[in-house]
Figure 1 (tube, protein in one colour):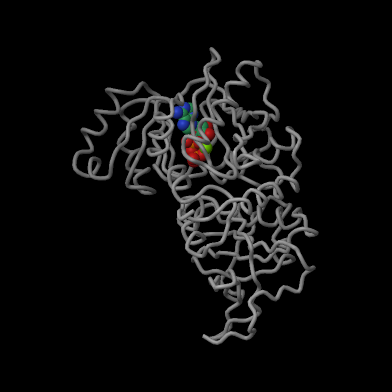
Figure 2 (cartoon, helix red, strand yellow):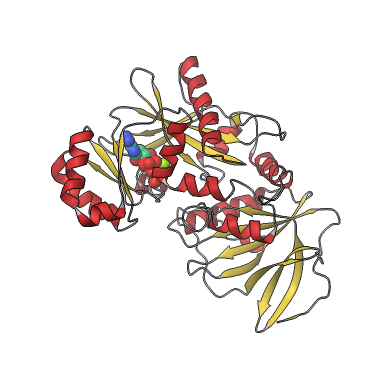
Length: 387
Ligand SMILES: Nc1ncnc2c1ncn2[C@@H]1O[C@H](COP(=O)(O)OP(=O)(O)O)[C@@H](O)[C@H]1O
Ligand SMILES: [Mg+2]
C-alpha cells in the first residue's frame, strides 16, 4: 500500500494536544448503545486537551474513520438508538517506529494519517470488553483506557469471574457451571445436579453474555432444560445461580488509583429499582423501559455500614480480577443487610445518564472530568508485559 503523507503525525489540531482514538460501535449486541455513548463522550470531552479521531466499528466488524463532529452527530434524543453502516471510509491503525498512526483507507492507499497517543475504547460485550481488542492495542504498543487483556477476559466470563472473586474472599452466591461437553453429553445429569444443589428460583445465564441477553429466571426444575438450551444458543458454557429473592440491586462505580501506588477509588453506591413483580433487570428494562418500570436511585439510601461494605467489596472485586481504569461492581443487598457480589463490568454503561457517570457525578467527579481522569490513567500506565 502507498501512503500519501511521509509523516504519520500530521494532526491539524492545536499543538500539544493528546491525540485520542475514540473506538466505538462493535460487533456485539451492545453496538447501538456504544454508538450513543460515543456521541455523548464526543460532546463532552475536553477538546482543549484532547484531539479526537473516531474509529467506528460496524456490526460486520469493519473499521471506519470518523471525525469528532460525525461521532457527535450520532446522538439521538428520541429514544431510538444509532447504528453504523459499512459505507464510511475504512480506517487502519499501524505501528511505526515513531508511534501509532491512524489512517483512512481509499482503494489501495492510506490517506490522511494522524498520530494517536491513546485509545478510548467505548465497546461493550464480545470483541470489546472481553480482552480481544485490548490484545490488539497491546500489540500496537498503544495505551488504552480500561482493563487489560486478562482482567477483561475474566470480567466477561461469569464462571472465571466467580472463581477469581471467591479466591480473593469476596462473598458470592451459590452457583453451578455447565461446561459445553457436560451439557451435550448428559443434559439430564446437568439438570439433576442443578436441582439437587441449588434452591429455586435460579437464574440461567450464558457465561459470556451481557445486557441480560439469554438470561432466564426459572422457578422450578421443570423449566430448567428449556432455559439451559436457550442460554446455550448464546454461549456453550452456561452458569446457573441461586436467585436472591427480595434482595436490592446496589451498584458501585470504581476508578483505578490516581497514583500508581494508590488504591482503587469507589463512588457512592446507587440502586436499581425494578417495580414489576418477578421481573428482573432484563434487556428491555435496561434499554427500553416503560415509564415508571425502572428507577436509578443515586445515591442509594443505605445504612452507613452497608454502604461502607458495598464500597469495600467493590474495591476488593476490582482488585480480585485485576481490573484497571474503571469498572462497575454490582451487588445484591439481602433483607438482613448482607452484601453479595453479583458481577464486575469492566466497561460499564457510559452515556451521560448511565449509572457509572451518575455515581461519580454524585461523588464529586463530573462527566468531562471523568473522561479526562480515564485518559490520564491510561497515559500514566505502561502497555504490555515487558516492563
Ligand atoms: N442470582 C440472582 N438473583 C437475583 N437476581 C438476579 C441474579 N442474577 C441475575 N439477576 C437479575 O438479572 C439481571 C442480569 O443479570 P447479570 O448477571 O447482571 O447479567 P448481565 O451481565 O447480562 O448484566 C440482574 O441485574 C438481576 O436483575
Ligand atoms: Mg449485570
